[in-house]
Image (cartoon, helix red, strand yellow):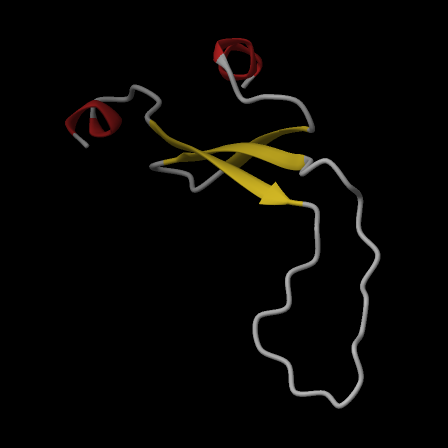
Length: 74
C-alpha cells in the first residue's frame, strides 16, 4: 500500500479456470436427464488484475494456458 500511496501502480493479479462440462450439484428427478457439453475437459481461462487505487479491472481470456506470456500480455 505504501507503493500505491507514493504514486506507483499496484495490481492484485489472479487467474480463474472455468471448466466447460456441465455439473449438476443437486437434482431431484424421476427421469434421467443428459446435458450436452464439450468433451475433453476443456478450460476457459481468465487472468485478471485489479488496480489497488482506482479499482480498474483488466482481463486476458483464452482457452489454452495461463503462463508467463499471458502475464506479459496483461
